[in-house]
Length: 244
Image 1 (cartoon, rainbow, N blue to C red):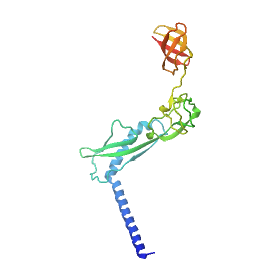
Image 2: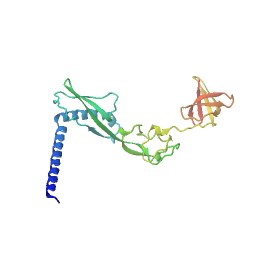
Image 3: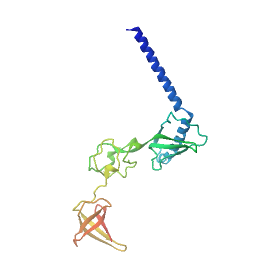
């Protein structure tokens, strides 16, 4: 081994180490500056206050707030008045948020933040095939960061149980409204009761459904006696109501 090269290599390593240490100390000094602390504290209080209505929904909800530090090149004086914090009025209270921090009539800066909300939502306990009715045995609770869910979620079982899967739902997948649809309760060709009602009377007859129907949907039925085709609202698996 060449001794001279070894000494030079060791010296170079020490130089890199010293440079890295200086950069670290400089970065730490900037991040821990009084101005950065002042802005971070104001932003944190604002974001936490915005979360209160959501946190009040359940004691199991937890959160994580990360606020990015100010640009190290900023050279601003500490604000002697309380900082004013605001955001776009259409922004959510969680996810990626940009905040405007104002020192009244002195300066304004923008900081970006990431607010994560962890709560229990409904997920699939097993793979649910497309077009199958969902039961409570298909569901489980899973704690996830809802700020990353783009299509919603459910925190109650009632809106999901009994619905039909519109697509295959895989094991552990968070269930949202795009995954479910109301089950068809009247099928084409089914014999149904036709209830024709007005303010002071109701007439009951029978007919045949001319199409499938879900609760609340409008379908056409043919009256067995008059052969007349009328349109009504599906009330249950045996009844269509016609309004006058």
